[in-house]
Length: 513
Image 1: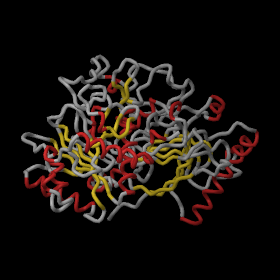
Image 2: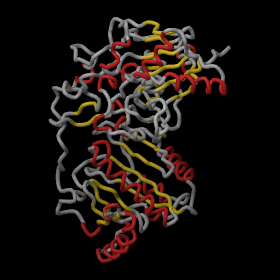
Image 3: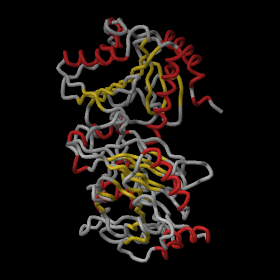
């Protein structure tokens, strides 16, 4: 018999508005039935006389919380006095301070702050990487220590507050696709304060079966919208070294922060002021600090695609951005077949810096819109093999020629015929997680967001992407599979590009004021 799910409510900053919170909880329970517990993150107590008066009613027993309520410690110096014990205790009937417990296991077997649910007042720094953007200033939001903790504990649900915002991040995976065994996904939810004037969400209801009661196959199921792990997002520091986005320094950590401590002895605990300690569990993320930063690759000879190179055919250029440019493909498969290329010398997508990736994505979206206006869907592919400069091929396929499923099937069938294992990878997977720099690969992205990937072993057909698209099943122009058979005169290329520039201009973000 399957274990009954635990019904949980999570709440953001209460700030002393206990009556408003519990009235709302009672209304929810009247409609949806009794919940098992309420978890509060952020600042629970208020500092106003009104807040103190409300608390006294619950403290003296004049009023009682309608649900088992668990709270974190002080998030500011002003409310420290409200917590009589550092070790956790019952503050009032049905209201329990979790203290330094670290892992609290309820009668249901649900673990709080361990693996099922993590509660922190502060947001983890960088949690928005690879996901949907929150409505907060990310430059000064979040704690590196909390991010470090969340990355280690891999909670199924992580709740935080203090930013006055409601943010439900897309679920993220806790393993590297094709490299590590599948693990459960994590969900981060930030909640606003109780009775906030903007009416942002401050209560979150959900059902959860304790992890220990789930079959492994059920636990590791990956939802369609799952993304990469935000805490494995790396940026460069001032010296050019790669470092996780949540790596912290003394001056970066807020002086008055509170966070769970990853103690080897207890497996965690809620601590007071965020003063740095030796051995705080961040060493794993600094293991590459002594390595020399990888140098930016330089062409080994003349490069036909570096925009500053004398060899580049500038008459083929359609649009130039800050970090990327778009050009008509030499010997194009169709008249609208274009390339997105980095202005600097990069060999593959996985080597691009974040600003280049961002602009390349803008060009991709612009081209998708452009092709849509022409009644076509676009297919993108990259061959990181026997090429020294990244060329992201973007080919339009008329909507009335075939479906996205037809395109996917054509690639899969022809790959199988050539004894290549073309694998489908999750839509939100970052290619950098699968193909480290230097690894040869072929990659396709369909207009649906579906992605196909093949790690090249040897003897890869250089025209494979064009051959599939040119096949009878798709564009039905097999004679144009080889670009060398499709070359135009310079005059013809110039005329084609002039018309293409004019047509693309309304979609070119570089033309915006």
